Image (cartoon, rainbow, N blue to C red):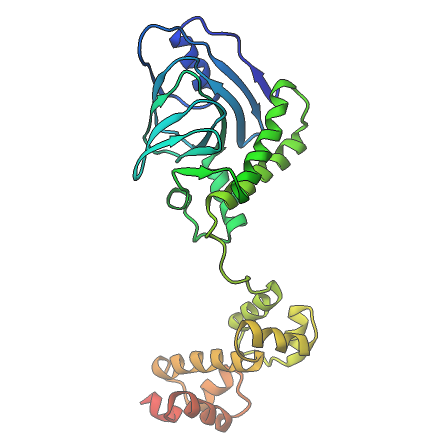
Length: 309
């Protein structure tokens, strides 16, 4: 079932075990005396994401290493005190504490009145989502994510509203099908990443795939007798559009880019292969040795025959 209900535990050991089964193994210590637990635990399982309400009904201290998953706790009532990378973190309603995967962390005081809306993300899955949402493998979530999120405005507020809307399903077991759960998990991840890593992925617009296809083909086979039409066919566009795209994204024309690759390969051959200038020119697609020599001199300042020596 996508949602789980929990019967009231009889003691602290049972309460701790129930929460560990849903979220993480942890070390739990009640604070301030002998009050019995009054556990609140309702969860909605979306596969790589778990959403739930958790409250202990007593003051507690919790140590956890968050194995294999990130955890985000948003107090609905009361407050949550923890130790972050840069000092104490105290979250109340309108804020969220972020705990990193596989990182020893301490909640020094989860107060008796505090119920959190918690979101658990599978770490490997969220790392992959970060590459898609934020723009590549430059993003390292353990370093990018803050210790605390503000949820009162902007992307933080949007994410909080999305999680809050899903929390309504905690009382309706079985309402969500598998496909819907996958889509909701992806939406939760994307919204969270945009809120938690606002600067990541904010670089220039990526180069179009059509341009990348041509670049790859030219690098793979620069000695081919390429025509402008051949290159446009690889890109799936017209010659004019391809030339415009290269000027915008590469800074030169397709022919100029191809010439640069050919000269680089030819220069390497002249230095190491023992081939003649004519042989090198023919290997890398130049129509004549004289044309190659002129282009080589413009690029490197010396004739190719001198480079062989």
